[in-house]
Length: 541
Ligand code: PEP
Ligand code: MG
Image (cartoon, rainbow, N blue to C red; front, side):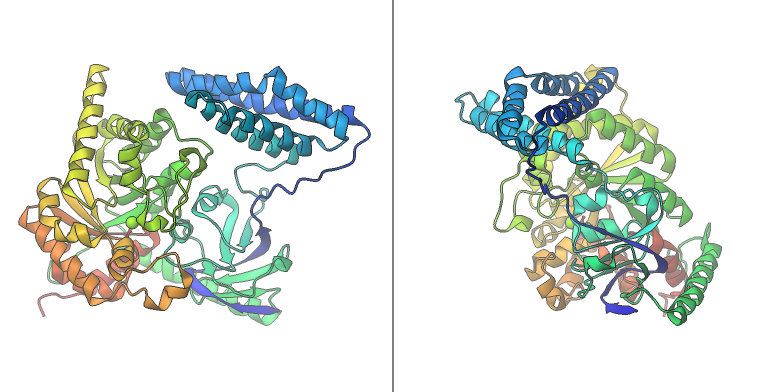
């Protein structure tokens, strides 16, 4: 048995078989193939499969009246039929006697380079399409796909580290627990992993790929991993798991009860979600509503920007299912540690301070409008609230509202009915705290994002594991800013919520309640324990 000490990311214990995930690398085997015909046939089959996939996407887009999307996919089909490209790859296979994948890589790269050197910027952009298609043809040839999955048996996922996009691509139905050699508590990858509601251990430093296929125990509560556990440890954990189950079952008695202190102060207890399917966890844990739908998941899981219809269906599902409870959907916070290839964001020395969140949205209005239109179309299905992340100035908020107004006007012209909705601002930088009065006057509610507020107040990169001991969300500067924001919001009659990791820190609940916070948004699993905590508080003493 190997015992590994790591850090707890999310609670609970589980026993299962480990599957070790490695980032898809194109470990292209050059090969040495005399039989070029067989390689050419393989290449043609892969091209055909990708083409079929693209046709299906083009048709689906057309059915959904997404003319632009349909044209993009149709243009991909045309590229895959390009004789020059096909002949080039086939020539290489014949002349070099190398594998189909090796020649696809060379052929597609060359065509992309040729296109990039053309003077027309529109045509130049086609080189990205070629590279995207190259990736898909390679995946087809090499049997990798964009969903991370190890078949249909439940397993414990082990990895050196995971990016936010990799967590978004997990086939969550089969993942029992996650253990990582690296990882950091406050990254978006960790936040998404935590949202899966399964035990997670990070920084299990001696974890290695040798555990693949072995039985293991992941103890998320204590940050421990046991590889090939002995009988005694298995028996001990069988008992612990039964106790855990008893405890979670006992919390169920709080379902349907109010989140109210002994002296009658009620608070809204919302849940965070990242994915429309997380809504079941919100019901299971009886949250008042959704306080933070991090829409980023939709943008991370696929190779392309999600279409207006895809987004609309996701937002509508959540809003409709949660109705009459409210749903706060945050506009996309992409960039920094959540990079997506299709936006081609610049490489930055300080990405957390860079092109991310609302800055991306205001720079790429075309994408932003797609998201806002999708949200507005979902308003008639329930109680939707739109939240803008990383606002640092009034002018940014005004610009967001102006674009939202343009979208409304467009939709009304298209005879789309728009329901009522509210507008909120995330307070996650000291700048926004200092102008919280003005932001509150220009919006309907404020939501304090304690993760980024800590990062930017203490000037500590939340991604950097070496700085963990300095990353202190309890720092008086953070607590004071929370108080200032609540007071500013209340001066303007706005509701003020707290989200981010600190919101579920039970040692802070009483302080936040005494400050007068109107709501907390936490991971679904934290809702009932916090309800229990709040029901035990008496603020009159
Ligand atoms: C926060 O910063 O506290 C927050 C809720 O947003 P995120 O963690 O997604 O950056
Ligand atoms: Mg944030």
